[in-house]
Length: 423
Ligand SMILES: [Zn+2]
Image 1: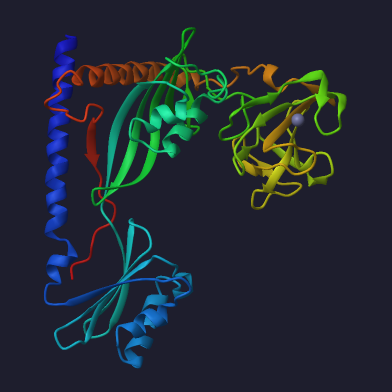
Image 2 (image 1 turned 60 degrees about the vertical axis):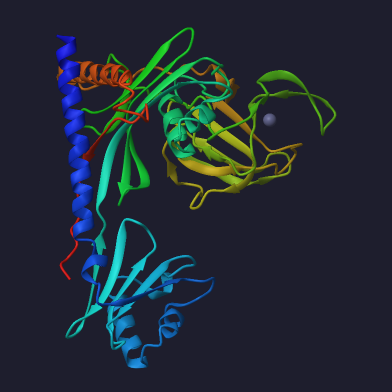
């Protein structure tokens, strides 16, 4: 029976793969460059400080034509927003009459001005393909590098660590030999990597536990659950920053302070981290303090539910819009690691109070209080089984090296956003 399931999956994957190839061919067919073969095109890259008018003047168009282009272009994009390295393509006919302008600052869109009997402007949403891909591996030094070693970038690694932030501190608790798997969406535009979509499933395994995260929407939004339908999200993040080297000081009632040169209590955890590492709100709450003091340097304090307060010191800078009274979500960036105030090196000093008393942030119990809507639990269990079957299937396909030479490559499904107008 299992064999049959794998076989059907294999057939499905191969046909999806062929379908994508077919689609790619189709993209070529109506690629504008084929249609515009009678035009002469010149590509300009916007230089530092260069304006839209300056670019157009380079193309030796007449002033009234330039005015008309700008006029038409302004209806779809502000010429003032043109920035360094953006691309402008200008096409003329054989008599050097303006026919078409294309502007690109992002692979997902092309801004077009064209002239037939009058000037016309519109936006083309470029074809995008979403593929579902899978990687698995083992940690050598740290999890970020282990994911990067699989050919993915840091963004995916950070998305992965965020899933398990409430259960494990992926920087201090992860050891060599721990295993991970990630099933995720990857978006391509014209065959080029554009961005990551959702991580659909992730697992992390050490010698004690297997942690799994299934992304699921029970009608109240997509979040990650464990296999039993308990949300992976807890009250407090295990570590409120994007990455760090090590915990340089723990919660203690006596610690020798290198600058003050005496023993004082340290009711906080210090995370030694690279300069400007993003610092996250450890839990949802309202900002109650943003300011500088000579010990803590640039400091943010947040008031949370159930009598909790958290404090973040020695920041390099605050995140945009961070001010007293603002509500922040757990995981939202509130500032960046620095060494302002009394600090010997770049680190985050993170303190938590419960009902006015300092408590050890590393010992906060995360209750699994959010669970899946009970009426959706059966659907969810089926979903969990399907995802596990898929992951098992993928792992077994990797034994067919000739078919999947890039061993971790999985399958793609095509999706077309928008459509190029005929020109
Ligand atoms: Zn400290």
